[in-house]
Length: 109
Image 1 (spheres, one colour):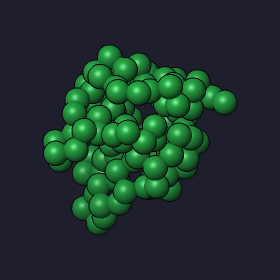
Image 2 (image 1 turned 120 degrees about the horizontal axis):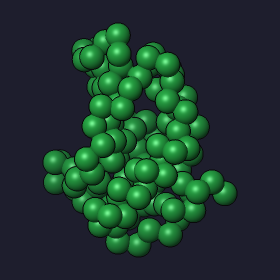
Image 3 (image 1 turned 60 degrees about the horizontal axis):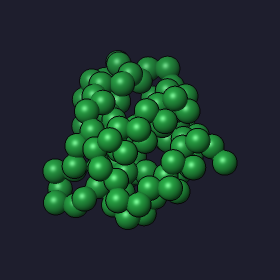
Image 4 (image 1 turned 180 degrees about the vertical axis):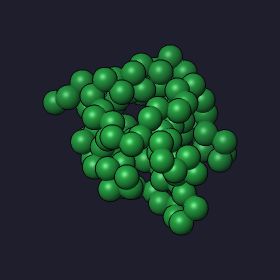
């Protein structure tokens, strides 16, 4: 079990500190593909009325309109990646696997 999976599995009622620790664990295990860069790391409750936590955003270096955001989903012990660009808005399947997040980012490179 990766440190990220262990952290996600142990979350009960995440607050800002727990969300920030989850973000840090994710970033330590994530292999950020070439062409992507971390653009925002301030954790906050999502602005869509859910209790999901925004953890981190990535920006595509050659296309700044292409961004990816990772959310800690309320009550599910899972992360979800949202990709937005001029061509698409796409929610990836929820995961606990940083490799799946890397693969999705790589697919959008």
